Length: 460
Image 1 (cartoon, rainbow, N blue to C red):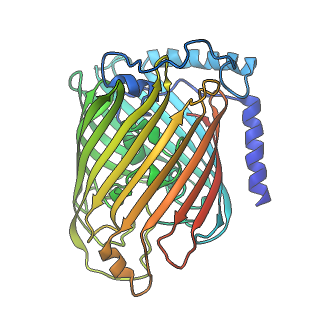
Image 2: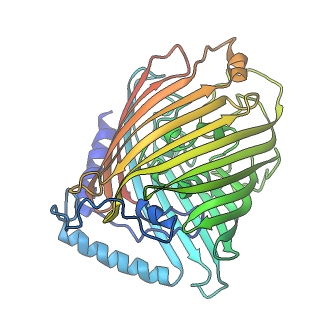
Image 3: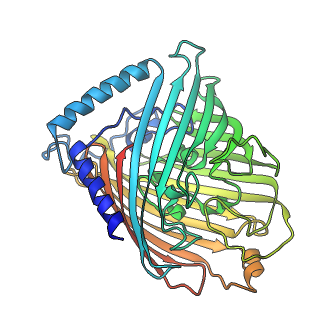
């Protein structure tokens, strides 16, 4: 245990010395690219500007709002950004980030243990028009490297405590292209898309505050509605169309494979077990000058499944049981989002509420329904404009059919949990997050899991 913790401290020290070595952020032309910031999101819904309240338009009294400010690193940052902008003008955008975790189960759960691990995320976006080809085509590639260990098996399988470490393949050291998609603009608001999609990237493009587990909450139950566990692989092949209002997707239809291809090409067994069909529509709202939205969606699958078949976003026990596969699966979704407060002079300072609800087919999914609600604040203190914190609650109800199948060997219950995090902007491009989770596990033999951890993100 001493060695990983020393590695983590060494990494932190290295970050403090080097501070930041990142390029300009990727654009949001494609659905799988990193999504707009909170500030972009707040102004993308309407053409007019939101100025609900103005905390203060005066310059920040605490320099740039970071704990550490280094003129040398600032100059290096300016040079890197200048090179990145030059590349972007030629149609090439590159962004990279390193995230490291030191996380453990302090008590309860499956096993009490602390583990060290991390991720390297790389994005490459090519714009065909700027490259001198045809107009409107964007290619987005996401390469992920996973190293070290995680506590997902040690804590609660039905509520993975670290969703980012599920990619590319949970429990293994691996590098893979988890997303390689193409988007062709048909007009100003409609976009055709096809390729290999990263599920978290796709959801992140809808709700940037979910953070992909790299920022914001870490538990999978707070990042996505877990009712999609049966019909949403980590990475999948598909094609469809998206309609945009401003910079945000408003409606979409996507047909995709039922099988996870995070570490494979996806072509060898494409549609061998049917197809999934996703459809959604999003209604944007304006409440007292503050933006919000309601999303209504559903996913229908034509494949055959057993409730305890392996699932991407939850760890499902099968205990060696045998059951007859059932045809078809579905998930119905409702997602509510509302900005509760925004500094009219600095839109990136805001407080948002996000709640996700899902209902799944009980015969083919281990989850009957799921719900969460999360409150997140960015720049709540004017002197700390880049710091953030969040608190959330989630409930995952296991399907009765799944519990009945496992009842001879396991007694299961619904999963409840609370997550709290605080993210401190140590330096430009470098954030350290403290995270605390309390989870009531599905297996009644295990006590309530207390999961604590640190996350250091450099870059994206």
